Image 1 (cartoon, helix red, strand yellow):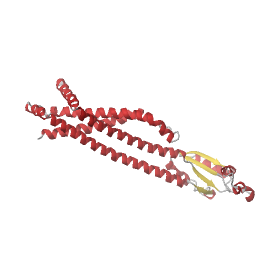
Image 2 (cartoon, rainbow, N blue to C red):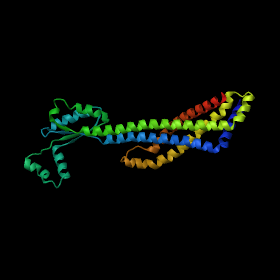
Image 3 (cartoon, rainbow, N blue to C red):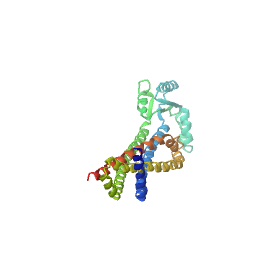
Image 4 (cartoon, one colour):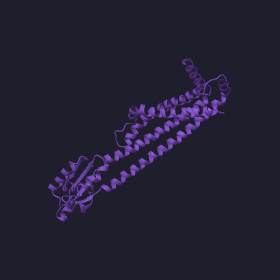
Length: 304
């Protein structure tokens, strides 16, 4: 049995070398398919990073009326901080709000003289609320609609942020659906390439296959070298894809961090942590598809 298996392996390697350029083309197509799948995976991850980056910068502002005193503001802050979904609450007093407004518009006399002309500060205090998850903002704001707080609330600016987050999430969903569609397309193309490669190999060995059938060789003994050859395509394609992805990830990783303004996402580190899982899954998928395709191609030929 060991000798038979050795002969099968030897025959597979000989076929691979004998049809060298066909093997190179087939392996290259498979490698490009795997590289493309990894690029789409990265794009999908970056879409999620973009959502997280925007979410971390969002703090919903609640602008209060000038009649809201310090006790009301303190009570609102306390009621927000006790909620598990609230990460941080920052209070800006009416005087601080006026000072910031005057600093932003130093040449506007109406703003600079607002207190003098009106006799009082026209602005009220505000609270900047940062949630642990953007999906929690509606519930957080709804908690302030109680009769104790609602009369003091002048404006809430969450709507614009919510639209921005929703737009990014829609883009992320489109990237994900596109990645699935393109991956399926590459899988079909790769299977067709493997199918034709095996058929060409079978054709070049048709006389040998005929002799093997005459001497009583089993269908599996005839089929196995081509299945192993297809498996070899998958092994080499996965190694090539990994050899390309890791250096590229290391090269573009710093640019991605700069683009997202110092995000902690490390592309190279991600592939170093998840590489075995990612490329292992891709190899198993490619191996399953190519070996099944090869087996079917040989089986169809043997039934003639």
